[in-house]
Image 1: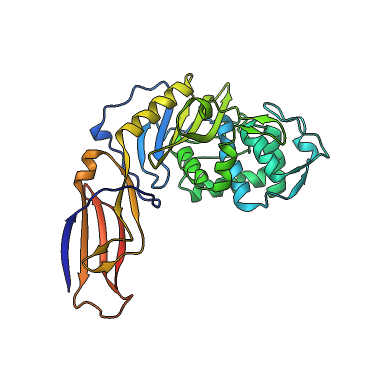
Image 2: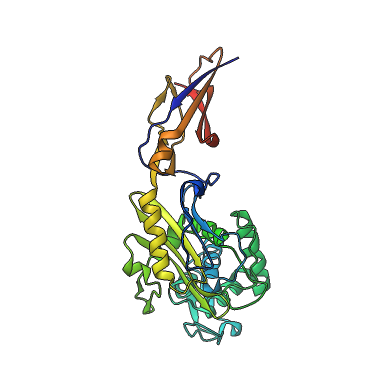
Length: 334
């Protein structure tokens, strides 16, 4: 037998874990867009705050390198030395002009990849990681799928044109959100100038947008201008993706401004609080509008009879927004 209580949740402010995204399009007018596709997500929850054509498969040029970088960071020792192979010399497009036989650390190649968009760095890292570009592309696809980027297909580590190579704005936002939760990745993409090699970051958002802390530009004739941007304000970290957007910097600033003005992070559960004399172990925060915050409901169910020993599970707490479950966890005897 269970006893049920329903409590209207209160709002504060912190951080949390990935959950099912909810898009409040029914409450907002459709945005006028200069991009072929765009998406804005909150990093910790992966909640989609804005989307236009976000499920459309498109080429993404050098924003591909976000996945290349995080895959290498997750799997490799950044201080390992890499002897540049012949295949990485003279790769077309943007380059840091690697020479076969030169020695670089994995970390240096990552800075060349993300700050200077070095296609040669991408090939060198792919070969170091997997032994071949084809094997690395397979690893990229597996990684993307594990992050919920299920509509993407990667065939190379740099984003040079290939009709098979594509993603969606939503997929790319999820990949970037995952990457931005990695401390090493954040340090690289937020770096404006890498002194050891004299490399300046091409991403103008780092200098022009308040709170910007990454992530990657991209351009090819087939993909158009693409930009993935991360920015943090008021304890909320957002990722914006625009694909094939002639005014990519201006449009990104508009998207981020609107999201920061409309949403804020709310603490819906705090481990420090006691719920009917019981404890919870995990905090929960979520991006909400002011109107949404008033409609969040917290439901608590206690077991009957209650257990008596400290640490035993006494029941369960669930948090809902408009009848959709956002989060649940056990309650414990204290």
